[in-house]
Length: 622
Image 1: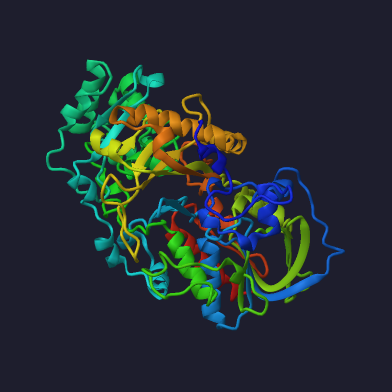
Image 2: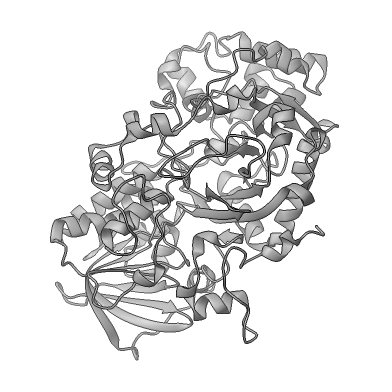
């Protein structure tokens, strides 16, 4: 681009100046308290400076020798990982041991929250808040345990408040619906169609004048036969496994991919199946070729309603998708930090936390009962050689190795790295931890100066079955705690894009695709993401008057090479007797326990909280 967007790579949104020849990374390391991480744009998520030390131990096998490093500090609890699970573990531990418990939370990023990432933008005088990772509270009525409800209540979160904060009628009142973008590389022509027959609503109130499935599919740039196949799939439920018993159907659906089911059992042509290929990307971070057909059924994908297996659908997915702070679940992390470290931010409610100013200089203050230390990558964790002794912990900050001790330790980091941090773990446990290969993904927030093009085109969210970005959506319409969501297309707004780096339909397994995608993300510079953003938005929205170089104010790319937690996959996981790998992997070892959503193979905030509770309870047994 010829505009100034490309020059916002690392430091836009801050008052930091390039001085003394320091690179942006060197400045952040040299003066971390002078930055305000949520306002940094450019390449975020697993940003430069956050993963290199971990890669040294995980990829290169480097061992950090602590024998000559003196123990500098002692704590009751050290938590490795400042995401929601790590913060919740610190909260539960303090609840059990009292406010004077000495707690240190270490995190390798320049911000807390882990995947619960807050993105801030200022366009003109307008503050825009967005989520760069963990999006919303999923199905709280059906899925939240009493422990999760209790923690949220203690943090001041009233789920009923979202019923008014989330304006599900806003976009419909402007005549906007969900749409589909067909890219010319896959479908022969660029075409945006208003209306999406795959949409389940997610709590939106649709325009009562919305078109029928037949009318929407009639505008698809597909052959007449492919269009008819899709209409039959979506409108005329059939039992595609007729003649099989219920048990036989369930067993079969575990052995074939959703794509195979659509092609060979439903009978879709390759042309029609290409439209369906993006159906599983957003929710599961996987393509139809590596998603078991049973998992597609469970997640309410089309093609199964005639099989008599509706009771297998996941509970809660019919709940309205409205439990969303303006910055996603970053507000949950901020509520936890504010309670753990009094004085870091004013306020006490779920509303005032939205705009609360956090003083990052107060996260790690000598003498405070709870401290949160950023830019700190743990490289060594070991139980004492004699029972009852402290846990030995080493970490690297700014290239310097530090050593501390703790009576207890919770590892709330990525489970895949734990065997490298703690070689004393039994071999079966190390192997089990290595099985949870996380799913890579990219969440992008684009600050737009206005959104007239969306109104002209009649869409607020766009499904893109084969384009670089699988979905493009105007931000959730949430007004809360003094933050007001834009209501008029003249106002600036955030646009959310999701990229899932897959290598589909080439015979690769899920793990092979995850690892290839992870490496691709690490090798892709910000400029390439920017190029893809500009290209896709101009092609989709250009007919509505959109011009990227004029209408884009800023871009934040939240790159997550280790994104969603692994989930059991019947197509590729070996059948084993006994406990599943995640139960073996999370076993307590001495005075060290393991938390995070990885420990339950469930990429949800409620899973992260439940695992934190379990980990802290296990510490009482050590």
